[in-house]
Length: 271
Image (cartoon, rainbow, N blue to C red; front, top):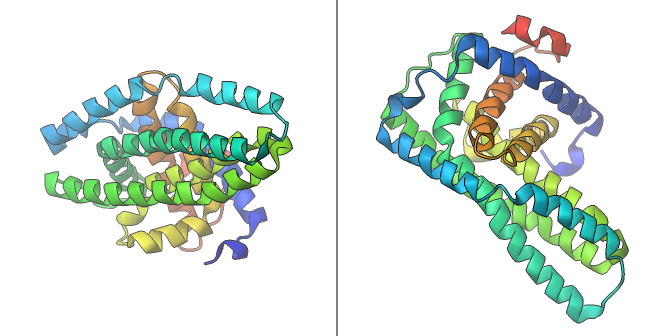
């Protein structure tokens, strides 16, 4: 599927449905105690989770930086010449590279949460065997490393023409943070949703093509992950847990044979 073939009306409905499904996903987590069994994958998974918490502590300032940058960009709307443009593009690119990279790194480190939550949720709502040992987790961890690396690279590549455009048309520069936010959110969402696709034997390329077909779902998942990462300490832990459960529920409903998008109040009844 090509980007130009996307049905944006359908994707908008998928986006809306995914967003309103999050409260039901939270209630599902609490009711089914999805977190139970997180530590059955060995000390390796615990070490990764601890490292993720440390990385998360360094990301606390992201929210303030984002809104401050948005404010500054809204004020600075003057054309400052080719030299200034090149310097700003370089500085912004370095910042975007390191900031977005840290968030994809968080997903790699927290794969144990995504892996476990996705499997547990699919076991409950679809009866799919969720038995998994350290070897299964290790394979999923390696795949997440590849997927997140690919997603991060794609984020940087897609963001480049956006940066160039707003570098040329500086009077529109106040819109740039929103565009960059959405680009990164989609690829963060893809990294989470891929855990669902993996359980059905999809390759990474097949999973990415499916992500484009369900752009609204992946974008909604990524936006929530991105926002929750701003919550100090607990955010990085809650983000993959809630996102993995919501993604699994919505993708199961969307991809099941003869599935239709059900009203949001029916999410809990369906699971």
